Image 1 (cartoon, rainbow, N blue to C red):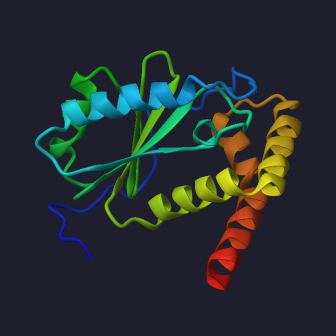
Image 2 (image 1 turned 30 degrees about the vertical axis):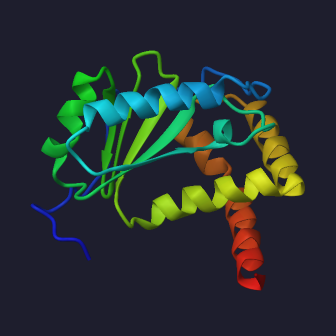
Length: 186
């Protein structure tokens, strides 16, 4: 268990309140990895004096997978409660705070086309993002299932982006279970 400077927040703070889903699913765009690289470098510059881990996650990180055109990035920091070590620098680099909740902070671009998820190094959530990403990169059937699910769900109207994300949970969990099983067979 990491040593923390203070207790973490205990509830969800969603800056700006719920937001409707306003973007649809787009076919894979080969510019998404370059957008990730640009923001990875921006984050590294902003947090130059900190040891952080940065990875491209989410559907835009999976070649060939259709996605909402929002690049998701995960950043692992030493202490999620020590916001002074990373949050001010990310805000100064042009990101805006959207979510503060136990174990997780999320900042995004004003254009809302990049979401930066900040977790503590060793957080299970980081491993789960990478597990899903890697499975979707290597398993065509699960990649097709996930894309089909997202397209079907996007046919509905969503007043809250979080509700859309929650609606994918059962499929995501099933894909991650298959990834764990495949990993155990190796």
